[in-house]
Image (cartoon, rainbow, N blue to C red; front, side, top):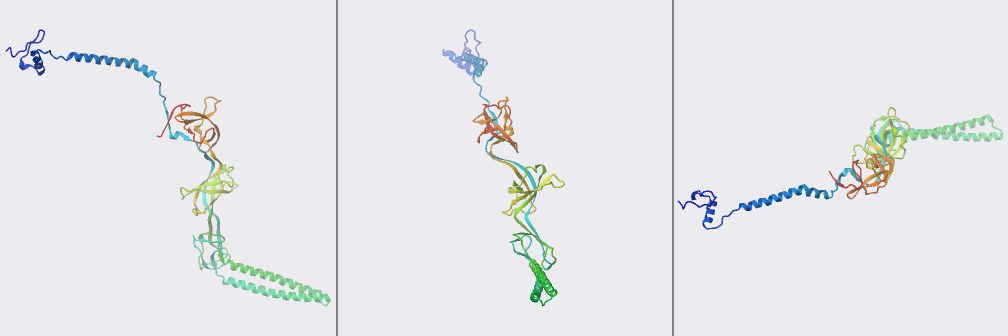
Length: 411
């Protein structure tokens, strides 16, 4: 029984039976039997906990006292204002313009409605709509048989009258010779003179009839008065036409005319010779340049528009009659000038400091005094005091001051 029990020192708990001991208790009992000191760790654990508690207290004291003082002693970093790409611009020379809007259709500047000069049966028509013809080309031929006979008859009548005139002049010569010798009555001389004058008048009339017949014969052949394109055809071979019957329409597309309408209120600003930039329906992305040629003296009846005629070169042949165009008449222009949006100009806080802009120099704002000129369309104002390449704040941002740090961003 004594072998199964472990002796205990004074003040310790009664010994346990050997079978009830834990592994740690058996190890401690073995150290006791061997005369070795027991291993107690709790004093070290207590010491470690005391050290940790002291460190935590020191850290909390530093947070309450030392850290705020250190933060207060450190200088505050400046806060940069973010400026988007739409809120600033780089100054560059511009071309400023004042314009007046004009709209209207296009038509060929030269157009000829060709009609028959003489009546007869049409033998041939040499051109169709869309055909290009050169000046002097034969377009329509009318039968010339009857007209040729008319010319020959007129020439024959003129020849007969010419012979009668020659005879009358001979008779007048004899009568004058006899009258000089006193053997011819004055009445006979006067009769001879009247006969000669009548024949001269007849001959002149006959010669005019010859010329008329020749013109009718020439008119039977219709020729192009200028180079162009056939726009319409109203006659066919075999058709009998009279003088004045419409036959063909010829247009010259090398130069077009815009029959535009401008606001009557802009009549004072519009003048002949001004440049016009045109955009034509059906030709996207193309711009044509024209010139104001004529301006109507009064507005179109029932409208508030003033007819304006604009000449447009059509060397490429892209424009057609009937196309609708929209144009801008340039009434004033300033080339290679510096201008900024109205919102970029800032008024100073005191009356004596004048107008200025904020220029981005590096990462900060700088004040630049400027002189504002006249205002142009688009809200642009001519300015003096800035240079090409300057980066100017153009948005009406509040709170910006010279010397303030900025950061350029893109949203």
